Length: 103
Image: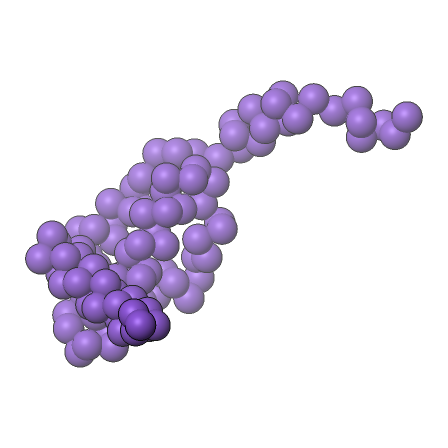
């Protein structure tokens, strides 16, 4: 029996979770929401996988996608509902264009 087989995965996950500060991750995301222009510098230094909590990682990935879409469309980066909806609409249109035509 390998010594690693004796490690309780749930206990290990709990111990690992204590090393991360959910409040710090929320603060990071809140800063980006308050000042979206910061995402340009943030994405150079902070990869989504650096965020421990799945929801925080997902939110950051969405923010990066919206920022990239804004840059491609020459829009000011913003995370307001209008911008997010416009990006979603563009994404949907692009998806429809990629679908093969029905025969």
